[in-house]
Amino acid sequence: MKNTTPKESEEQIAFIKYCDLHHIMAISTQNGMYIPKKSDDGKKDFNHFGYIRRQKAMGLRKGFPDIVIFAPNRTKTHEVFCLEMKRTQGGKLKPEQEEWIEKLDAAGYMVGIAFGCDAAIRCLHKYLES
Image 1 (cartoon, rainbow, N blue to C red):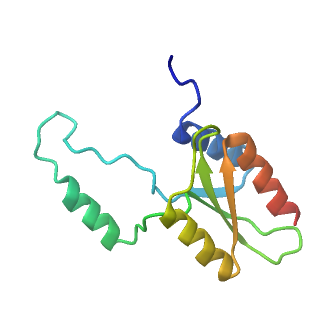
Image 2 (image 1 turned 60 degrees about the vertical axis):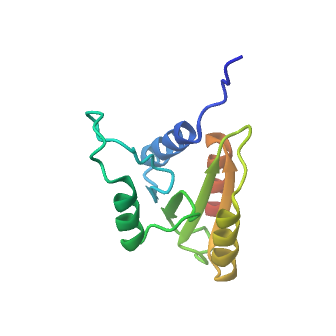
């Protein structure tokens, strides 16, 4: 039987659309981006591992939350909210994601984990109203 649970990327797209509709500045960190092993025309000349090395050198960090939201909360105690997106069913944190969440929390940043778009919207509003 085919899995009908939306993919994490689909949930994230829906959440970003919600943020855009409500004029909330949210950006993707591109950590979940698919990097092809071949070029678009199917040739094997695409340097997959060279591309990954370059992205890491430019600051891509494995496990960093998927979305960064730039909006102050109600009490103005925070201005940045980091959100890790997961599928509604079957999504689980990887060790490097847990490490980033712990680091960000220890540094005083607000961090959330959302299993699907609806949960992400609830997390966002809980943050904004705090």
